[in-house]
Length: 336
Image (cartoon, rainbow, N blue to C red; front, side, top):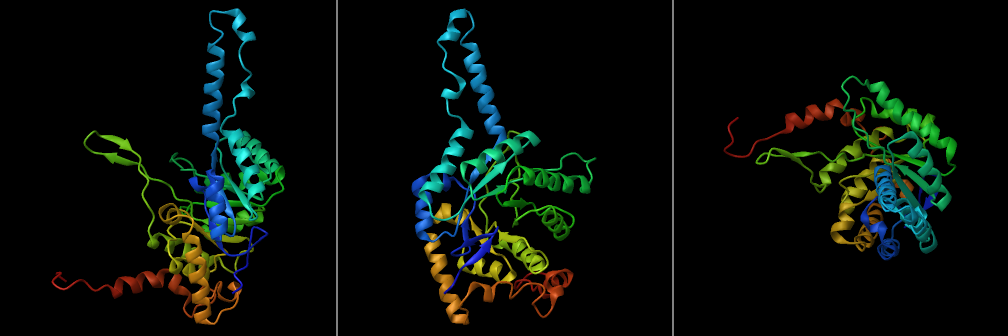
């Protein structure tokens, strides 16, 4: 079976791409992912806040050593003698590139315009094959209008495109008022691909202590249906790459998003839970399913169930909502 796919202008041996996770912090785990069949790998995210906090803490530490002794400055180590989060990240980019044969995509989560530009340039210089923008932005200002939120993403992409020459993938949230139009704007601004969708972790409330708490909730296969729907709607309507992320655990999940029109399938929780070897299972089972269905190439099945290809395109829109409600049948004994 030919599982070759194109993503961000890169040729991958198959569509399975581990997304940003702690696995990429380890060279050994990353090599296991490659050996198990990963087509490419997205590194864990570099957070500008973490870089700034560490640098500010180191500056305070070195500065305070001088207090009370003028001669102390001549004995203090230089700031650059302490490798920080940024140094470790760039070193890991270089190490992964030297170790792996598959493409290495860095992930950046910035806050300030200068931070985005500076770190993106450094990542590109370190040798990353592409850059994923993990633009985690919550529009908490109720006076901020929708078009202003959209313009944040477009402006960021345009400015970064002037700084780096490597392909840029943007991880989007599902909360735009018109996702399709947003993707088209990003494509016009030069994006190489989009990942559908960024998962916003929600704060929780601990009612006993009446305080906020933060918890990581595992995804489920049903979470992937949102990405499947929008991959189906966008397939054939945009030229940029489409990646499906969030809730893809099984081969069936992967096949669904590929049939909808995704170019790559991103995996995270399933690999953390089952280990890198789970990739081998997914690749093998995808090949077995393709053989059963008579497909020899991945391109033959991609988009077979996109909105442009199905018999009733409205099933991806409001009509599906109506049919689902009408088809509901309560359990025996439930009052109707």
